[in-house]
Structure formats: structure tokens, C-alpha cells
Length: 430
Image 1 (tube, helix red, strand yellow):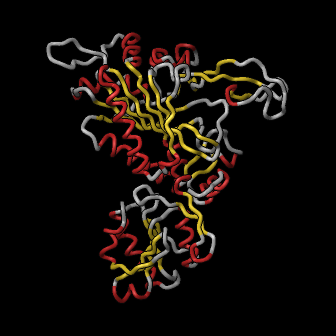
Image 2: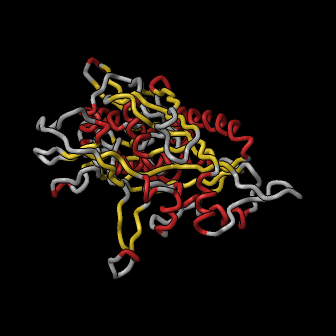
């Protein structure tokens, strides 16, 4: 990975249509970001690879898509209503508010004295229906795990799985962060990819190690630089209230080594808590002739936004191809938001444009993430596609009209080769 500042990443992300500030024409909204065409494509690839590896690619994991709004009793049972909080302090002088564990003894803005720290619950509160009273209160979910646990009984009743098995979900979560910062690293609206893996109490360590390895298999599939990932064994007193063991997989971001993914052993905390609060039986018959048991849970948790940021940082590369400074994103072909771009050599030659359109439409049928580009000279098009991480550029020229071959140019090396049109679908990773 090239030495890269967050300023370079933020600039490239906006300029090339990956990520824009939320509500920008109105001055923005802190902690929110909008995703442009390339950002959406990259996020979808991140999620699709995850889903294929951990849900569709496995016999023992079942997918769900639970509601964002839940009965508030679920959040009371899970401990979020009473305990999902961060320490908050307010400057006595400028009245700015900060997380107490992220600043020093004085206000970082004006140097003023700080007030007494207090706990601030990060759940977004809202109301169901036309009446805004205590009876109508609910919350935007602060994590996706809750929707998995309340559907445990449904999955057991519908599919009769045997231990160990998992339930996976990808979805939005919302956290009223005191101080969102560092681009998309800490935001108020986020997307999680989580699995709750239900195991026999005596076998949690085996499953924990298996999912530990799966985390690395996923980062390798994406192309995240493994040298920038470090494990932190979270000590007692710093783990979440439900966890008996947690490993944070930290990444070397430009702003410091911070959590990328988490792996937690949640014991039977969640199922027991929801069983006690709801009255529903949340256990499973594991062996014939023996009493039903409450499974324990191993949870690998992945954030889409942090994954995307780590990918941008891992892929960001600067070189001097052709004797001129160049910036490009060295995505692997599977994760790249655009798999290939199709050019007519000259956009003012109808016969070249028509042939290029024919090739474009053919490739689009088998690899939808194909881009048409006829803006500017061929060199500028190459550099533009390099900067968004397109692995290959396909140019239709006058030779194409004669022999149905095209020029395919490699992003990483700049090398070009002639390829028959018929061979193109085999070269493009969809």
C-alpha cells in the first residue's frame, strides 16, 4: 500500500463517484455519507462475496433479513436500553460535546474546562403510530444481531438444523455517535454483516478458531492487505457486556490502528435473556433422549463501511507508468466495481462507435459491471479507469473492423494485447 493520507482517499472517493457527503447541497449532516455508482457497486461486491462465502456457500448457515424496527422489549432484554452508551462530556465554555474516552483533560476546540462525564445512550429513539407517548416508543436497531436472536425459534421450527449451525444477516444499523469521524469509519448509519453461530457449550473454542480463520479467508478474497491486520485480545473489563471472549481484528488506518472486524464468544447470554423476557422456549433438542439445551454463540461481525475503507487503502497505489505520475486502485478483479471498460478509439467515427457498442452489449449480458467510456482521448480514458480500479480496458479500433480483434490493456502493467472478441467473455471476471 502506498503512503496515503485520508485527504487523498476522500478526494478520490468523491471525484470518481464512490462516496459523497450526505445532504451536501444543504451543508451536509454529520456522520452521514451517500454512495455514488462506484461506491454502490463496490459495497454490493463486498456483500455478495461475504454472502456467497458464509451463507450460500455453506450448508450450516441460514440467511435472514429481520426488520429494522423491533418490539422495544427486545432491546430491554438484550441490555441495550440500559447499557448501550458511551461516556459524554461537555465543554463549559463552548458547549461542544465529546466522547470522554477520546480527549484529554481540556476541550480540544477551545481549551476550556470540561464538565462531569455522563453516560449517553446511542440508540435512536422513535415512535410507532400516530401517538407520541411512552407506549409508542421504539428504536432504530443499533446492531443486526438482535433480529437474528429473535428469529432463532423460527429457523429451528422451519428447518430443524443440527448443532452447530448459524444464522447470517446483512443490514443497516443506526448509532447516535457522539463524535462521528474519520470519513466512513465512524458513522451514524452503518451496514453490518453478522453471523450468530450456535454451538454446544463444550465446543465453542473449536468454532471460535474456525471463524477466526474464516475472517482471514474473507479478507484474502477481497484483497485487503493482511500485513495491515493485527489481532487484539480484548481484556476483561473492556469487552461488551455479553462477551466472555473477544478478538478485535484491527487495521492500520492512516488515523491509527483501529477495529476492522470482531469475533466474540457471547455464551448463552442472548438466548437466555430473550427466553426470560419473552417466555418463548429458545432451546434445541441436540441428542435423542436427552434434555434440550440452550446453545452458546460465536459471533463474527463485519462492517461494510470499514471494509470498504480498508479496501480503498489497500488498493491505493501510486507509480510513474509511462514516465508520468499515476494513481490507481489495485482491486482484484472479483471485487472491482467495474470489471472492464469498452472504448471506441475515436468517438467521431460511427463505424467504430457501432462496433464498440456491439461489444459493450455482448459483455454486459454476462458481466453487468462493464462501463462505456468515450470521453476524452484514449490516454485520459486509461488514467480515469485506472483511478477507479478497472482491471482491463478494451479498445475497438480500425483493425477490429477487419479481423474482429480488440486491444485489451492491463491496469497494473499498462501492457496491451490483441484478443479476439469471441474470447473476451472468458477474460472478464463477473
